[in-house]
Image 1 (cartoon, rainbow, N blue to C red):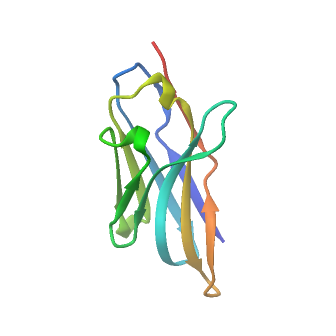
Image 2: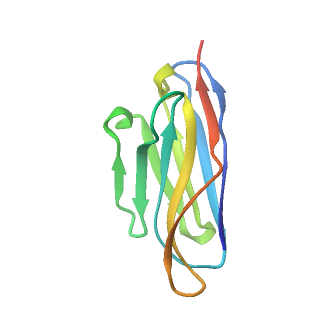
Image 3: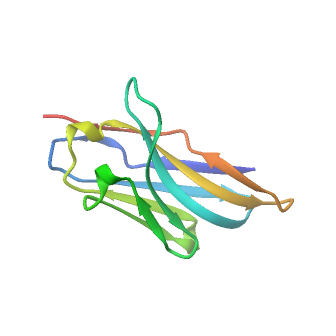
Length: 120
C-alpha cells in the first residue's frame, strides 16, 4: 500500500506565501508523476500543477507565474511553493501521484488534503 501525507497548509494574508509538502511512503517501486489538485467550497476539484519523474512540469493557468512545483526523488516528496497568494486560491489542496507498488501495477493515490486559507 502507498500513502501520501501532505503538510504546510494554513492561513495567510493576500500576497503572502506558503509551501506545501507531500511525502509518499509504502511499497513504492516507481513514481510516474506527482502533483497537486485543489477543491474550493462548492466547486469541483481542479488541477494545480504536476511534475513527472523526468522533471517536466505542468501548471493550471490561474497559478502560472505564482506557484512552483518541485520534487525530491530521494525522499519521494513533492513541494508546491505558492507565492502572491490570492483569496481565490483558498481551497483544500490534495496531493496526487501515480505509483507502481509491489505487485508491479500502476495506481493513482490521493492524500488527505490540507487547507489553505487566503484572507485579510
